[in-house]
Length: 109
Length: 176
Image 1 (cartoon, rainbow over the protein chains, first blue to last red):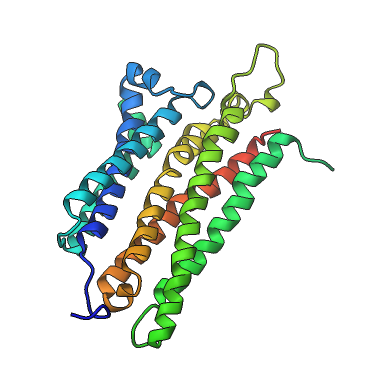
Image 2 (cartoon, each protein chain N blue to C red; image 1 turned 90 degrees about the vertical axis):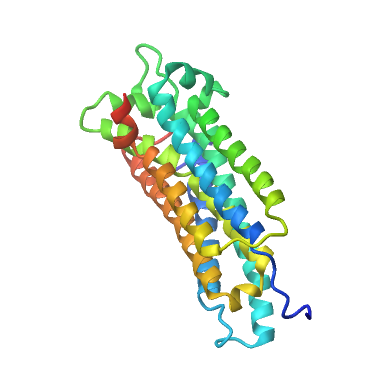
């Protein structure tokens, strides 16, 4: 197989997509979680001037990057259906999006 | 006519970085849309992909800088608690919450903006990675190209919601 016709494994791309979904999901979970639990809200105030937002976004970024490293390593040489990966990503991003929407997370107050 | 230091940072966050994000998104979307084997020569695809790598990477970095500067520079000024007897015009969050007609700009507008904005860099970095990793493969794999476009649009949509709300909130209660 020549370099021109060689197909790159889809696993790393799927890992990039799904980890973005996981990061989005964690952002939503932390946003709603901080409404449900005062202890979590206080714990997320990593930088006082920015309040809990600093912790919510730090946790989301950590979850995103960590899951990217883990999935990227596991799927480095594997193939993963891009459409399936995208569907999973959309579901995760969709849940994360909903949990950052004020009428949704304020319903847990 | 003068801008305070806080206003300069707010302009940097919202307009300089926001403008750069918009430009790089437009370039990335146009490039990805036309990245098809039948539309471009082999050399054309290679040249287009090289530019796409730059556009999408710059968009991801700008997106991150925008939310980072917003959260750690501008937002603390917005949410600072007003001391008793202080002029609320200097404390946007307190100013909005003190007026029932304006409170929604905080309870809905800022509460949504501050969170949803962070979806943008996460998705933008995934797009940049796909373009850098798969390069010319995107012109052959139409499913992957369409998925990349969809993620790019989602990254933009999250930023657009945040940007629009930011502009409207600033109009109601500017950081001065």
